[in-house]
Amino acid sequence: MAMSTLAEQLQPSEISFDELHSNYHPMLEMVRHLIGVVPNCDTLLEIWPTGFRTYNLIVPNSLNLPLSLWGMGAPKDMVGLGMYASSAAASCAYCTAHTCSFALRRGARPESIAGKREPREAAVVAMAEALAHIPADLNKGHIDEMHRYFSASDVEWIMLGVGMMGFLNKFMDAVGVELEVESLTDVGEILTPTDWNPDKHLRSADAMPSENHLPGVDSLRTYWEVIKLAPGAINIERQWLKGVPNRWPEVGSYLRDHTGHNFPVLKKLSHKRAIRAYTAVLRDNLNVETTTIGLPVKALSGVLFGTLVGNYALAAENEFLAKHHSPGLDDKLIDQVKQLGMRGDFESAEVVKQTMQQLTASNQLTQRDAACLVLARAAAPSPASLDGMLVEHAASLLSPENNIELMVWISVQQFLHRIMSFYAIADPDRQLSA
Image (cartoon, rainbow, N blue to C red; front, side):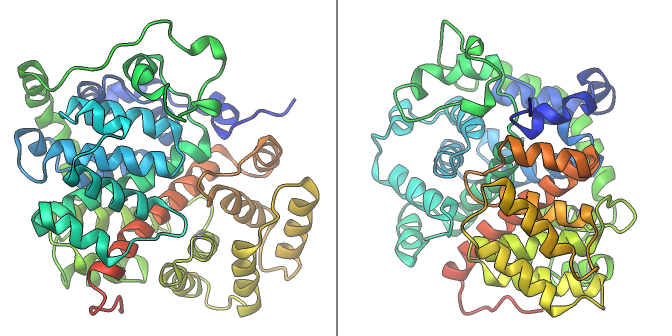
């Protein structure tokens, strides 16, 4: 019997929480105090260590944590509400639960979660949902409405929270990470009356708790525990960020030297902390020495993703990367990958088999390369369409490290897609050119 999710397939390769705590204890415990649980995704992401590092660079630096707990940056309840709204719009039940807990703990009104919103809450939700839709349908009206209630700096922080959730929404949904009982206990009461359904994120119906209670708002104890843990977490992060610049044009030069491309969307950001973290994430994910699937096929999966979500600037950047890392790459193969991103019928075993044959016909891709692209195509929509047949097929051709690296990269693509979609409307006069 085929396993139903990638998370189940990868379970034998998970890194134990004991090992994670021995290496990253302050980071894990800080998250526990922020959302009430250490997420199950941690043991999967560490299968390919760059994945765990990516996650732990994107999240705190997109949310200005822990400083935002003390009011430094955008209103934390509004950031949490945007995270929740984007997760629900992206149909990621796992993240919808976690962000509901996060938002409530940061002071968001339960009524706003339930849909009864004041004008500024409605503005946040509208922008978040528009960025989370596939394709994104953000318009100038959304941004103008945000500026009625928030400063430009705060709008950027709220947007970065939504962008960060693009990474998390994609990974948790595509992989099918199991939702923790503690999370269900926290938010079951408020989410059950909505159309939220944990579905693939539950191993069995028995996992649903019999009692629910809403989490409390940040307290002095929350602040104290975070203060105690912050130095250890900062020390780990400092090692990951050593030598990474935080301003343009130094960032563009650094990324061009390390990856072959300068990722010009980063010149539009104003918050240096976020810029530096994203620079490190892109450097690490395009490191020729640590990739397990190879940078050419990785970039091709980005071409596919960008095409599927209608972000042709993102697809073009990945095409540039693919040709940079594989100068002899055939344009016909790239067109084939784009066509795969545009096709609608991708459900049956026969279609998957035919796609594999077509992708390997030119002898430029191996069976493993083709499996990566097939899996990327299934992961790219929101929600993802990674059913049991595809999981079984990928498992036979890809290693656990391959699977996690690919899912992390597709998740980075969704993160970039949301940020690029925002600036395409908010700052259209500054072109995203090298």
